[in-house]
Image (tube, rainbow, N blue to C red):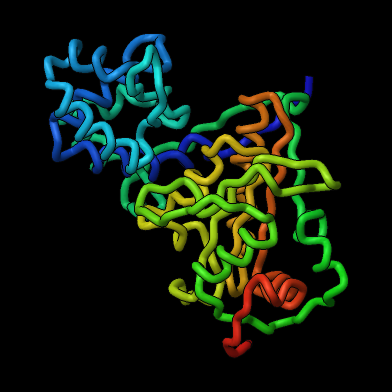
Length: 302
């Protein structure tokens, strides 16, 4: 059996772990609920179950629980006609590292991250059998939903600083997606849709968008999210297709990270994962191909 070595895969989650630790640091109630959700085999715990286990009032569980949901640490669902909180796969294997105040302090201080390179630790090597990996890197031209783009030639070094919210609205119009997506700090993606098509087949897709508010010449992972963990959060979504869009150039390191995360996701979930980028040139082509969707009159510049 061939084995694919994926270097530094676990450390790619380091920023995500530290993010959770910082969110839990100042609230003992949130820590109790977080621990109650992740302890044991049950994937979902009801509010009543958590209240009984933690000796917290139902109101306290609901107030802190919604904060944990908004921060992306747990998911809200229903169970036995009650509100339920579900584990996030990203934290299921590591929650014990951050379930007490003492462990949280050690995690924040000692975990090496992209935004805190001063900490040092050996890289973990995860060996994944290659027969379990089914991934494909795609471009905007492979997406049937954006088929008009194929008639638009590349506009080299021309970039349109279209605001992120306008680009998002344009994508949603093209996909005929009616859902409303509100931005908040712990979001996993900017768009999650089941209407994106590749070879005329529909897929669950998650997109991360970066508008001109991010002014770097080349987008790298550390420019994505306050903790540099936006790509990790993106690929933790329950999707089959992942896309990163930026109005200028996108550095190869973004694709490299997406590749490693796609390998791990494909191997652990047992399905094909497709991923790719939409850089400034392809964003321009998309705007030119669907002018009525974007209706942007800004100035292009290189």
